[in-house]
Image (cartoon, rainbow, N blue to C red):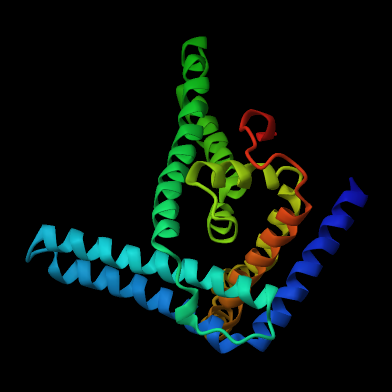
Length: 262
């Protein structure tokens, strides 16, 4: 177990180091795409708030447009990072990294599958816990345990299938295949991915700690640095992690789900 943790730590260090090199060399272009995603998300919320009393149909339409725009920029970011990894010497304009219409549609359908998987896992946990209500156990205890197990199951499921956008952009995989490939390639890599997320989320954890210690000024500075450094670095690191685990994958191009759950 100790050796496995050491190997996982070394793997995470390699990912972070490579991601940092790419981010450092192309910071402004990567940060620009991240900033556009932030502006799009903020503008969507503000627009929906201001026009919700004018026309609900118009409000829904605007939210849909902004969601499509956000996803397009997000996929463009991944596509741009792939280019930097594969052909860093060749210049490319951000506009040339726009995803195709087919990729956007596949991403939207895969997102619905993603949400369905999350809800399905939670439903299974609830169904398994339901009979325990009739065993004489305290209903509150059963409810709390079921919710706790459900949250953990949702987190694990989210982590295992969250790489599906990369397969759509990189491999042009179909929506369902992208979910299955994410599940298959993360099998055996859960600890490494979890450690990577802990490292990337370290800045936010420090921010929460400083807020708890009531050091608002220091917390504000840490939050600003985290926003301008950690966010772009996280996007690159996740893309690098995907390329690493997918290159090591030796399984079927169309894996089944049952053999890759555990």
